[in-house]
Length: 443
Image (tube, rainbow, N blue to C red; front, top):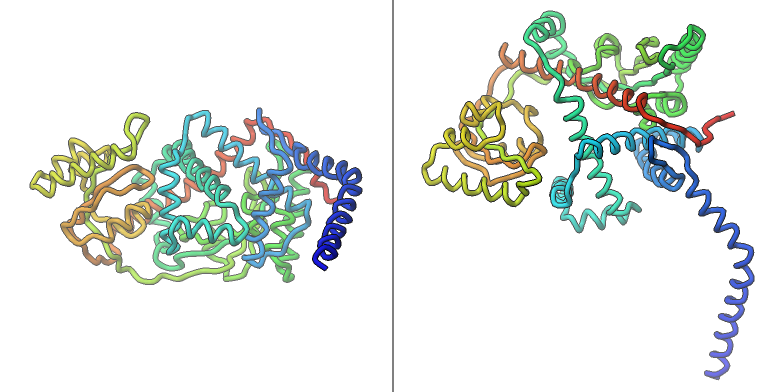
């Protein structure tokens, strides 16, 4: 009986193997065609290319985001078009960063990944397991995080470092718009851009305007904004249903400042013309003022930046030694003047003055908020470098004229940053050689 069962198993395996072998000659060309399709070039970006397999990986990553937001899924061609534009923008920024020598080393990346895991109540290994359980490769997430860190450094260097805010600008802002800081405090906006090319003819402009007006009519008749944005918008957030997220009212881009301040929740603006096209804006949600009392911290710090000749370990060790000297009786201010690489505060002995919530980067604020008055932190890292910080005192303060001026300054800076970044991204695209080989025609 045992021999009979064995023969039967071998017979079944033999039949299965024979069927597989018979299928191979027919499936091989199909497999080859599939490989060729995935390797097909869908865009040329300067001296680099984007292939279909990259596009499809990005599409696969976008789909769960659409489902999570409840955004209607567009047609394959619309989705491919929007995702490809996102990939082209990413590739252009990566190329620019490489030209400038901007990198994020593995140690810094691991520290950031560990911080991301910690903020979600996970260890790094638990984060890996969570991502892979959701169908995302940990290495893909890791490299995407590296790219985002590089892009942030690039934008700080290329765009944000050039932004200045003058005292007259603050005066004019407070004269005309101070009410926006204390009344309607935040708005959530959705956006559709119907673009026309630089130097567009009057016919092209009229065609874009007619399309924008037609979309406004549809929206005011009850059409879904997100669905229309995905299908029609030329804006950076098209795949997010045009969702620009929450803005402090004072930080809303200048072009849409008026509708953001005056439209009711759920209302849609008329088409707004800019140099690049017509914009449609919806106030999807809003928040009111929550009061003028803020918790302020008076702090000072010492900053050591890493470089090619100074590693993270070296910076951390150096700050640990400085901390021991301060605890042992050396003057913090004197050591800050001699050692801190934050030139703005070093001359003041590292004194940052009174700091409001949100004035510093999250890593710095978290470390500072965890200290008691007069306590000195252990060395920690932020996007600017390695720090030690000491809290001198804390207070609750009403919204004074000084605080209002700082809020106005921050609002102007954020507004300028958004507008400058958008122009910078367009300039990168205009100055590059980009050839799209993907068929995105819906007709």
